[in-house]
Image 1: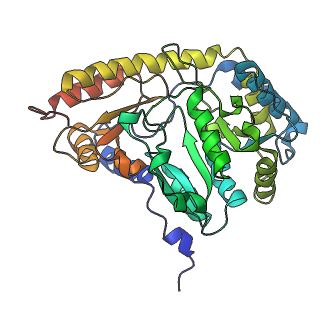
Image 2: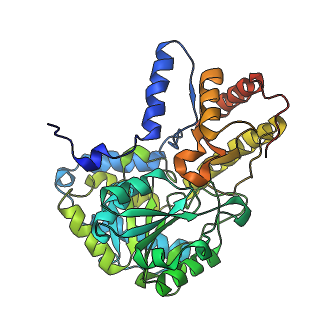
Image 3: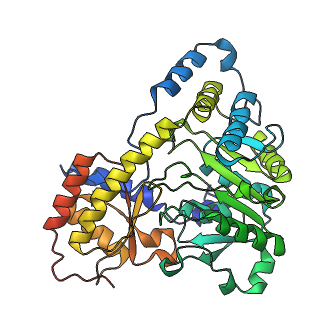
Length: 393
């Protein structure tokens, strides 16, 4: 007799956890492993945010339960953020909800919106948690193909109408993990139009909205007229303000969906620790110079590694956002084979593209989350690997 549910037993292994296990094994054998796998910021949380956390932590009133939807100060700060950055009006009472990181929010959203058997259109390649969240909620993930030739924007025309008719929800993520693709307002206008025509809820994951460079500014789906009728958007402070371990984010948009998600969460958790919410409010109410400084660091790292890839014959576009480089594997390797080669021969962890869906095969993702001197070491080690005569397809 097993005490484990079928839904857990049927989950695929989480690839990032597997690489972390192998990392520990190699380190135990004395290998200096450089981890470019998980997109976990290595930069410190800004001091003004930490100072607010410390101050709020000393107040006994903040040691109580938060309201289920998040404290008023945090929700108002989110509303102010959207007003200043996107010129979008949001009601803090009904259109904004605090979440314990956008990963948690997205997972609970599935339980709040889909029924067993409902189809969900999921970007391919895309963040693996989307598919597992759908699976845990009893839904069926349907790949929404994204490809390099089309700038990684959705190819709606490839979808069978019978599949669309079964779908309840569509997920997209820009700036994109893993491809680092960025889009303009028109992509969101088309997504809202498609969702309206097919009676879909559009869910946008904007986790990297403030990690941009080269003059690019990421749009919000909430800028599309009537977006609140058809969409919700998730945001996170994990990357913008180096607060990954703090676990704080938000959902905004459609009132009915926000209320449904709040209902699910009120039966599972009691929101995030109040001092964390108030420190996050300070971050969102700031001048964003800390986030801009982060973006500059990632840009410098990206350009360094991109130059090295060019010299090594590895093809990769220069992105305008995220903390990732998305590159083609050298000719003759699968994504997993190349990731294995990097780990075993160079002691470097990269993520094979097929971890993000079938369309990711032939690519690998690099997280720019180590200092420049460690990237220099990565480049040195890659130069020692036998890639002579390599030509990318």
